[in-house]
Amino acid sequence: TPDAPPRLTVIGTGYLGATHAICMAVLGFEVLGVDVDPQKVARLNAGDVPFFEPGLPEMLSKALDSGRLRFTTSFAEAGAFGDVHFLCVGTPQKAGSQAADLTYVLSAASEFATHLDRRCLVVGKSTVPVGTAGELTRLIQAHAPAGTGVEVAWNPEFLREGFAVDDTMNPDRLVFGVASDWAEQRLRDAFAPVLAQGTPVVVTDLATAELVKVAANAFLATKISYINAMAEVCEATGADVHDLADALAFDNRIGGRFLRPGLGFGGGCLPKDIRAFAHRAEELGVGQAVAFLREVDAINRRRRARTVDLVRELVGGDLDGVRVAALGAAFKPNSDDIRDAPALDVASTLHTLGARVRMFDPVALDNARRAHPELSYAGSALEAARDADVVVLLTEWAEFREIDPEAMAAVVAQRRLVDGRHALDPAQWRAAGWEYRALGRPS
Ligand code: UGA
Image (cartoon, rainbow, N blue to C red; front, side, top):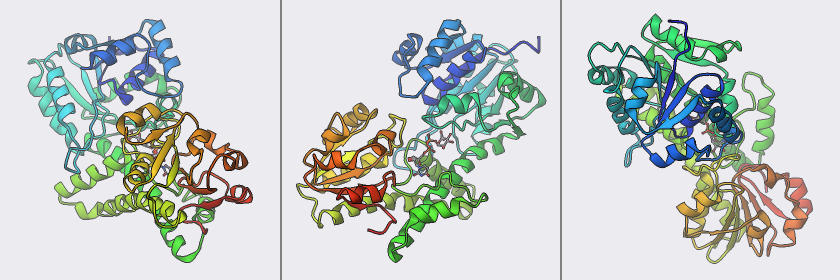
């Protein structure tokens, strides 16, 4: 019957796919997650979330207990199971290029399509260059058995790491890119519990839906680089970007979110998405329209170099043999993700310049150790700071804001601090005898 809730499959159980599959099962759908990685599938079936995300392990056990969620490596099983198939495969930056690598999406889709056995909807969620949905439609229709009547739709995902569960259960908006009324209705069925909460939905064409995602991430990246560009101007004039940002934020048209100055953006999304967007726009002959994104990227990369310079300046110009305590490794707090993490970039540059870096992060330490075995690691912030010549705060974990400047002063060799994230109160640290430095703030 047309009104029966659709059975859902989620293809690709990385960060996005695992979260989506788990949340949809908790919302009441029958869900089958598919991944080519048997280890990942086994861990998820055993109730073990393979990455750090607050609240998600509890949601996974709830979903598994309900009997509505399973994971498999079999595309054939998934083809037979689902009415709506969500494609959540990763689109990393292509090696040696600014473009997005679509190999995984295209190969997963073409293999999966051969197993479809009835009319169904394939819904892309991955972040892709505009035009990919059209290409996927042709590819899937070419590989699906004749007469299946498969359609493609686009439903971009806006979840943030650290808030993935809430962003999925209570999104700001849903975007449905569709080519037919039938596809729109199937998406409405697949999101019925979310729509019932009054979540706004924008129904549009495939290309617009693809673009919404990159346009949103590009806007957020631009906002961060804008305030960081102001930090550079502040530094040249002795002004304070922290107060400047506070004052701008009171204007509701500007708003204070994503206006925090400092070390800038990293992670698996913003940096690669603006590069892929600029690259795609050039391919389409409209590169000039988003040429500013190259500048957004350049400003952001300069933040890392400037942070290294600030450490160098603070220790008197020579980093050789200097003991650096690096607080934070993850690209942002409440995450163990170190992809394109500004913190690790700064720490490894300091190491290359001769500094002896000892790093602590509450959650991302194992990932950091694997990626950067050349650095030393400590079990706490105070342990990292022992005998340090300079302390550098690189990720604004809540526990770092609670550090007592007196307690840390007691263990370091020199009271020197670079606050890469504007997370600490300069007055409080200076009162405890620290030399406090931050990008865009007077020394
Ligand atoms: C980002 C977007 O915020 C999500 O909406 C999107 O769905 C996601 O990418 C994605 O494409 O999958 P995420 O990468 O989890 O989410 O992280 P953000 O919270 O956006 O932070 C990105 C970076 O910007 C972090 O390194 C953070 O430290 C930095 N940032 C953020 C600043 O430097 N200043 C700010 O004011 C805000």
